[in-house]
Every structure is written in structure tokens, then in C-alpha cells.
Length: 166
Image (cartoon, rainbow, N blue to C red; front, side, top):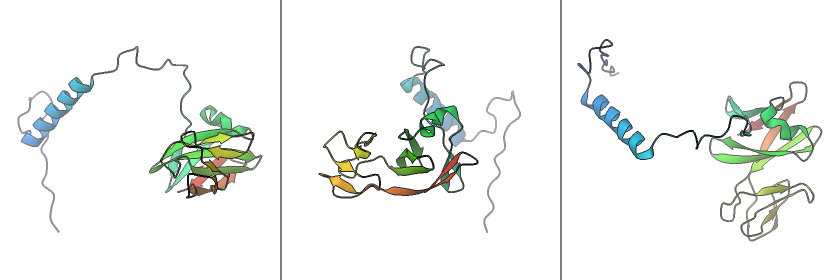
């Protein structure tokens, strides 16, 4: 087994004595990147009362949503829907009944547009080319020919917690 070389960090206030070339170059790269990208000014920041994205957390290898969190309030009502970011997908979560929540990939299998939930027809529509999907993810109308990925969900009503198995 190889031992890892120790990196000596100089005491504060000693400049860069003992810094490796890699550390110095990483610092220069970070500075250059910030100059190219720029720092956000106050006009670019959202106002403090602006709505934020739904809140989800990783719980083990799954995704968990606390429905008591105000940012997930849409899921407290039947036909409420939110989109959450999973590690490799956007997941559309829809509450279909008082104790059932459905989670499907939001990415259309035709050309990757984001599907939207239609609470009147109870289907998912792709605004780009007109594909329609059932709440089970199956194709109702093309041009998509493959179903949306459907995730298994587990809803704990007592804890008001939705777990999406990834």
C-alpha cells in the first residue's frame, strides 16, 4: 500500500512559503475564472421573498421530500406538482390522491424537452412536439415511442415524508 505524501500548510501570515506549484496555479485559475465570470451584483440576485425551488434531500441512495416544508406546499393538494433535481434526472412529482404521489422523469424520451402535468386531463404533455404520457409513464401519443422513467415512491403520511427510490 502506498502512503500519501503529506502536504505542509504554512502558518498564517507566512505568505506562500512551502506552497506547491499546483496550489499556486489553482489559486491563479480560480482568480482568473472569477474575473471572466464576474461576481453577481445585487440586480442579479433574486429578491428575498422570491419563490424558491422545492426542497429535497438525499436519504441514503433515495430522494426524500418533507411535505411539511413550505417549499413543497404544492404537494399537499391533490393535482399539485413539483419538479425536483435527482442526481441524474429531473423528477416530476404529482399528488394524485390523498395518499398517492407519483414520480416520473420530467425529460421527454423523444428529444429531451421537459414535460408538464395537465391536471384536467391527468396526463403529462410535452410542449415541444406534442407527445402525451399517462401517469404511469406510458406513451399515449407520439412522436415519443419510449415511456418516461417511473420511480417507485413511498409516502409516510404520519411523517408527511415522500421517499423516491432512485
